[in-house]
Length: 346
Ligand SMILES: C=CC1=C(C)c2cc3[nH]c(cc4nc(cc5[nH]c(cc1n2)c(C)c5CCC(=O)O)C(CCC(=O)O)=C4C)c(C)c3C=C
Ligand SMILES: [Fe+2]
Ligand SMILES: [Fe+2]
Image 1 (cartoon, protein in one colour):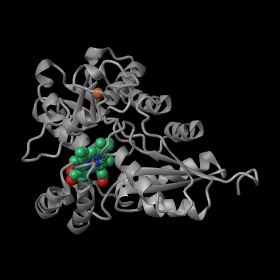
Image 2 (tube, rainbow, N blue to C red; image 1 turned 180 degrees about the vertical axis):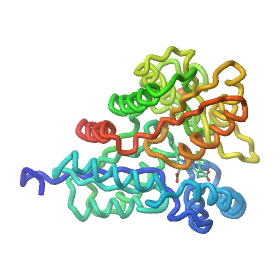
Image 3 (cartoon, helix red, strand yellow; image 1 turned 45 degrees about the vertical axis):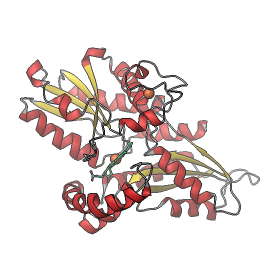
Image 4 (tube, rainbow, N blue to C red; image 1 turned 60 degrees about the horizontal axis):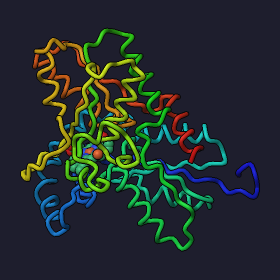
């Protein structure tokens, strides 16, 4: 029960992207079918999106992705899931009994629907939704917001619902990345730092641009009310703040984008691409690189495998000596505190 009998508990809904139920091809196929037919992820007309992705892209991709998920899988399952559940528990402990913290995934399980039902059953007074994506993107945060609104709009009694839509420059979020970075930098010398963010199609940035403010260059120089929700500008802002915390000069770090979905349409994604950035580094004398993945708050396929293993291999093939991924925030106590602080401020 809440401390005051007149006050209801506040519901908190933490949401991450989602992961397959198992690394079996059938489960990966089901996950990709749900993910890649979301109109906010693949913004094509439904008449093209469904047959193209269900009929062609997903059947071809699922077996390859399943092999990578098998590499990622642990005794506790998918890292994105177990770190999310651990975070839920720790944030609940930190916030205490005036709050009820639920956890859901945008795709697959545990579903947002189930998590919202838990909050409704507990008769929470209002709901604060925190999509666990530091930088707002219509394909990630926007999709979570749309799903929550769709589900809650069907309830007879709709409580107050608020969203924490971006925390790209949140001091607790930035501070935890700086702490983790400093720990790695204390172990050895690094010649350069790479910030690698999940990419999105350039088109998505331009569609979200405020009165044409975002033109894929310039807009990242300052972070202001016009580009507050521009994914690219937020990635630059996060990097700038982390670099400041680590005492890095601008020439000591590079910002790049990974994980582009190769498509026959060859639509450009945000650039530069990380795999293309890291290859020429050894030739320039940069042999030791520290890599950050600040678009993710938990270890997942895109961090552990893509940055931690695939990019490491590419870098070493190009003559690099040491490529080190800084681990994600996961359940670091400073991050748990940062999440609780964001909720309190809301
Ligand atoms: C950081 C937020 C994310 C954004 C923005 C995002 C956009 C986006 N992603 C794809 C396609 C894929 N992403 C995949 C995995 C994946 N993506 C995110 C986060 C964002 N995606 C996470 C946390 C993960 C990892 C999940 C895990 O289980 O560990 C995948 C699946 C893996 C694969 O087959 O490669 C795809 C596909 C698009 C098209 C897109 C924006 C348009
Ligand atoms: Fe993704
Ligand atoms: Fe922008």
